[in-house]
Length: 229
Image 1 (tube, one colour):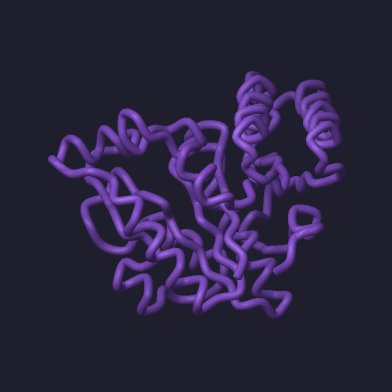
Image 2 (image 1 turned 120 degrees about the horizontal axis):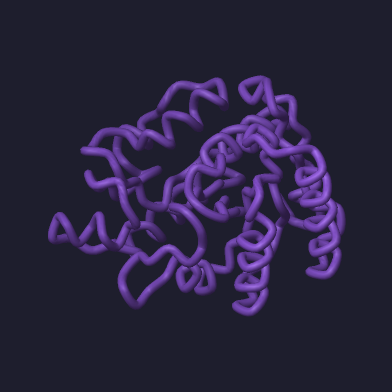
């Protein structure tokens, strides 16, 4: 079954909202879908905060897999990069446990949306980046960005890094909830469309509205064109 990784260009870009709304979109189309969190930092145990956000946006209650921690195998107290948050507790990120959980979810659902932690160059350990893990797993990448000043650089670097590692690209979620002046917002959107063409994913960009994010009315279909769900 299909696994897609939802990543950001940095922190607080709207990954959790995008993940929840994409899951809601797929549910509405009759697919069995769930979400997973790669690693949750800034939390002392319990169900991952981001998973709870996904469930709220999906319009469903947390289930037994959430309670068991299958949808987020590792949480850490300190709100920082996973490698630092883990080190502060004398622990390490267990990538094998993450993969095992994903495979369990794949047996139960048609689509798994794996939300990352920050961007793809966030370290899971000092010598192992999220990008290394995604390169090994070959999950198609959904990149969450916005029109905020500075995001062209961060987004194009993400696309280039993914391409160099042969990580499949699904597309971009363009988050209009983050404020941007119209000339910048409109131009940034055009730049992203241009580069999606160059990376072989023409039209694979979806705008999340400035308001009404809980409504689940966004058509995320372009992200999945060409993929077998």
